[in-house]
Image 1 (tube, rainbow, N blue to C red):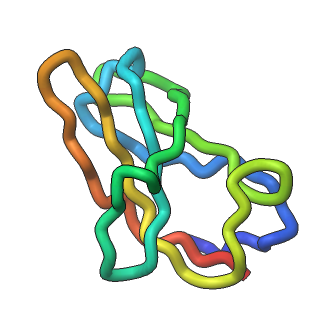
Image 2: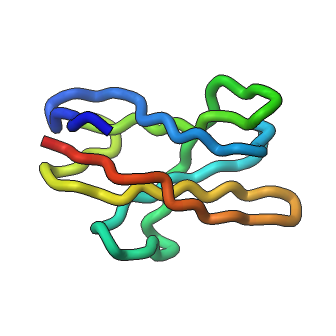
Length: 95
C-alpha cells in the first residue's frame, strides 16, 4: 500500500472475500506483529458488495480515526450469525 499522509482523511478499504456486506464489521489497527485486543476494534461499514465479497471501509485521519506517523497492521472482524472471522488485512504506512 502507498503511504497515506497523516494530514489527509481518506476511507481505507479492505476486501473481505465471502462477505455479503450486511454483517456487522469492525476494523482494528495494531503495531506490526501484535494482534488486536478487544478494545482495539472500531465500527466500520461496507462498500461495493459483489458476488465475491464486499469491501469493509473506515475513515482515517484528522477528525476520524487518527493514526500518528508509523506503520500499522490493519485487521478486519466480521460478526456473522455464527462465524466471527478475524482477518489480517495488511500494513498501513502513515507519513
